[in-house]
Amino acid sequence: MSVFKNVIVYRIEPAWSQTLAEAEEGLAKQRFVPCGPSQEKSAGWVEPRGEANGPLVESIDGQWLVEYMIESKQVPGSVVRRKLDERCASIEATTGRKPGKKEKKDLKEDITLELLPMAFTRSARVTVWIDKAENRLVINSGNATRADEVVTSLVKSLDGFAVALVNTQIEPAAAMANWLLTQEPPAGFSIDRECELKASDDSKAVVRYAKHALDIDEVKQHITDGKRPTRLALTWDDRVSFELTQGMLIRKITFLEGTGDGASGGKKEDNFDADVAIATGELGQLVPALLDALGGEAAFSAAPPDDTVKPAAKAPTTTTPADAPEEEEDAPF
Image (tube, rainbow, N blue to C red; front, side):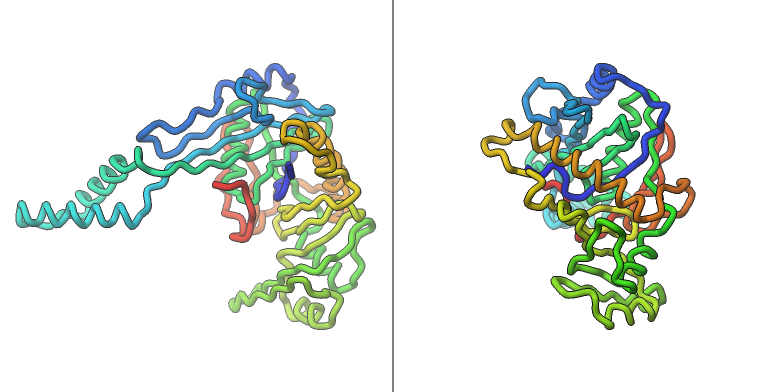
């Protein structure tokens, strides 16, 4: 089991000091309940270990793990449009008039509600890691909108809980450009063979390298001409490979041979504690090293790039983020 694939990192307000029992009680108030027959969406907290009636907060080596469940029903738009056309045609044939815009909207809503009980249900589970010792929140999602939904639910569930996105002294795009130009990545890191460069002018030109050496003059020329790195594949300490984005999203996380990820056999429940301990242990070292490589943390005042979440407000509200890049991989939904 890979506990984390794409992560967004936040800084937790240091004043938050709930106990495990208090957090369990708070999350239980928003426990997940499946969608009803005419309900389009339902979301809430579920047992991270996957055992019915188990705890909603798992503490493993002092690291807290919680899991957010999102379930939705979606009626195909083509079906709704066909039914709407049929109903409008029937009204016109019966009354001699065509339904107006507002009436069509009401009809569409009625049709959607009628079809919801027959719609397929889709679900996603989002793993959340709370590192109380380091005041750090890590959400396993490459989708910024979904991550913001999870943060909002945490703020509502946990008294005094507030977070803001981790921000760095050096913009990731500027740092990545320097690493590519000099071919001198920060200590402990190496540059891999994946990169995306995007022009900042009106052309919005994009150049992508996949499985390609990046220590070539062509890459340097693109940067000199004004293209900024938006993503760069890196490896840390020969232990974790990942892709860093301009908005501090850490994507495509792979624990390399030697970290012990997946080393134990057996069923998922047998591996749970070991998998969590390995993932949090490795990322618990990678994240500070990456922040140091970017000049350390800064105040949360800079406007975030397009592929990340805007800084979350203190309880009880958070801001609405922009969507992350389309390539992001998330839990099945």
